Amino acid sequence: MNLAVSTPWGLAGLLLVLLPLFTSGMQASATPWLALMPADRLSSFIDAGLRLCAMTVIAALVLGMAGLHRTEQSLERIGHGAHVVLLLDRSSSMDNSFAGRAPNANNDGKDAEESKSGAARRLLTDFVKHRETGLIGVAEYSTSPLFVMPLTENKTAVQAAISATATPALGFTHVSKGLGMALSFFQQQSVTGSRIVLLVSDGAAVIDHDSEQKLREWFKQQQVRLYWIFLRTANSPGIFDKPEDSRDDNAQAMPELYLHKFFLSLGSPYQAYEAESPDALKQAIADINQLENLPMHYFERIPKQDLSATCYRVAGLLLLVLLAVKFCEVKR
Amino acid sequence: MTETLFYRLPWRATAVYPGVHPGQMVGAGHLFKRHQPLIASPDPRRLDLRASVLDPFGGYRVRVYQQESTVNVYVLADMSASMGYADKQQTLIQFLLTAANSVLSYGDKFGFIGCADGIDKRWLLPACQQSGRVDELIKRLKNHRYSGSSNGLKNAAALMPGKRSLVFLLSDCHFSLTQLRDLLGSLQGHDVIPLILWNPHEYASLPDWGMMSFKDMESRATRTLFMRPALRQKIMVAYQQRQHDLKHIFRAFGNEPLFITERYSTQTINCYLQQRAT
Image (cartoon, rainbow over all chains, first blue to last red):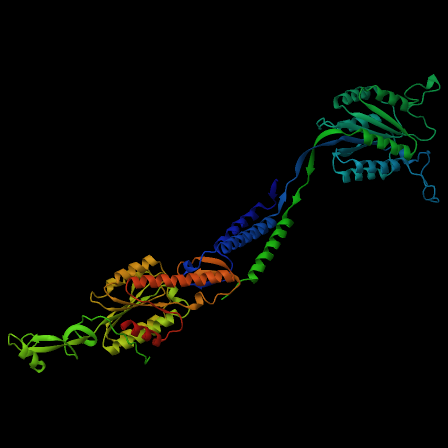
């Protein structure tokens, strides 16, 4: 209960709270000798209640005018969940359908195909919706990494970040920098629950030697699990494909395979899914949703709450009570 | 104005001056008191021959009669704030007027002592027979607003003569019983007639239901009461109990109080005075 006010000098009005102690607000009828009136416990109880009522009304009004609010707080919680960084590929090929064509919904609208990014967007939004606890961050990469949303528990913000990928995509696929940024999200976080980088991409790229060294180091440091959902376009090389020709067995010719091999060699838990249709993608995401629910210790942040409305409500209610009593007053 | 207060004394006045009340002096009167030797009362018109013949020493015996004397009548008025309630002030002035007229017409001396927190010289009238001073006092009293407590009453006895006087005590007795006992103790040398002014408005005409705020006229203290039939009954009982207590104390000092709760009427007071004298 960290209470604060927005205009502290307004609290000077709290001095008025003492007013009902000195005056009852009723028209007093003169009596020659008050000592002759027998003491009445119910009356003094009601009197004290009314004074308290009036004091509360004044206090509530003053606090309401001073702008009473509860400051932002963090609440310590223990639950099941994970810290997930969604690393999305924003290369222009993601705007194509799983068949490798540009989606042409405006032709007849019947067999409209969904783009890969569209399916990913839809399913990831679902995924975010069903995660009850844990933090989710969003990063993207194409030519260079894009910082979209840090790890947060605000689902609306994450969903907005995901839907923002609806804008047309950019050129290349620079996966190593993207991974670097995704891992950097965990730097200021304490290790609790599981940490996941969910890489959603439809292609791969060669990782140069320097970046490789750095990524290995970071994956070890941050204890991050990696899930790679590979949106495979029809007739393109997959992750698990073995090269038919040994001459093609190099990173330039088969970047997907070599990226997969690199991930396997990281030493941290890693799982790859190859999705060739929206259904497969859905299946993969559901898997991950099930797997990653380790106990975690986290701080839930509660935003600033304005309490002045409550103050006015209390004041209004008590004023009604006082008004009712005023109508019961006998004047002589 | 024309009404007269028929006050009779059940005791003998000690004043030397002739008046209308039974006195201790011998002189011109109608009531035979005793025989005296001629030398002590040299009035041959009052010679009692039969008594003189029967006197074994052969001296002349003279009849002497009891002289009717005057008495000092004081009105001791409580002028505290509570006496300003409703028509009490009016009653006080009316009584003062009637009493002053009757006393002066009887040939007695009339005095007034008004007490509030203390005794103010303005409200002090030593025993006199000048109706002009009384009228002037009453005129001033009409324009006065009562305030303060009734603490001055206990000093009033010091301003009265040592001789036994008739004292009309006008008060609502809204002070502690100890204070009342002290007051009556200090007035024991006089014949006190307590007239207690109460107004039924202060206790009998309260509403059955509702919130009421009361303010004490003397201490300015306030109290809020939630009126209901039971509480109303309690207040009535409290006033009855108070009346009973007051009567008890007054009787202990040999005075029967008269509670004036209705409108002022000289007849009521006369009726009471007659009961008292017999």
